[in-house]
Length: 169
Image (tube, rainbow, N blue to C red; front, side, top):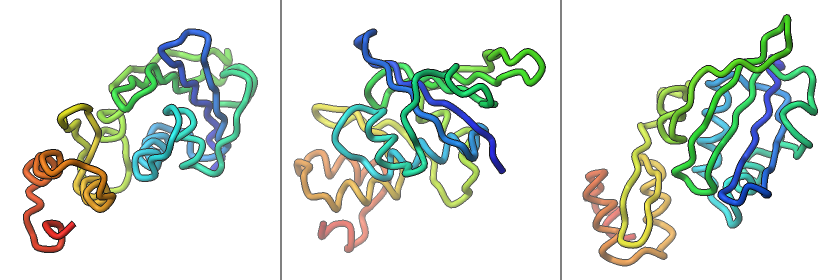
C-alpha cells in the first residue's frame, strides 16, 4: 500500500539537512524496517547517506512539505547511530503534521519493526565508539575483521557468541 513518508535528517551542523521521500510503507513499522536496513548495510557517509544507500526506493527531495500527499514525517536529529527520531502524522483534513513521539533510533526500531525474526537492538560501547547491534549485526561486525581483539571480545560477551564459527572470525 502506498503510505508516503519523508525522512528529514538534521546533522549537528544546522546548515546541513537532507530530506528523503519514499512512496511506500511510510507508517512506523515500515520506517523501522528502512532504518533497520540502514544498520544492516552500513556504508560511508552520514546517516542520511547511509539511509539512501540502504533503501533503493529512497529519493532526495526539498523538504517535508515538498510532497503534499505524505502521511508520515520523520525528523532524525544527529549524524550518528545515537540519533533521535521524531514522528509526525499528517492530518488528512488539515494537512498539518501532528507530533506523535520521539525516540532514540534503536528504540524506534525495537518498538516498531514488524519482523519477529529481528532481535532487539542494543547500544554496545566499544573502546573508542558506540555501535548499535543485535545478534545478526554482531555476527556481521565480527566477520568484517576490522575490530581489535578487545572489541571482538566485548561483542562476543554481550551476545554470548562463543560457538566455534564465530570464535574463528
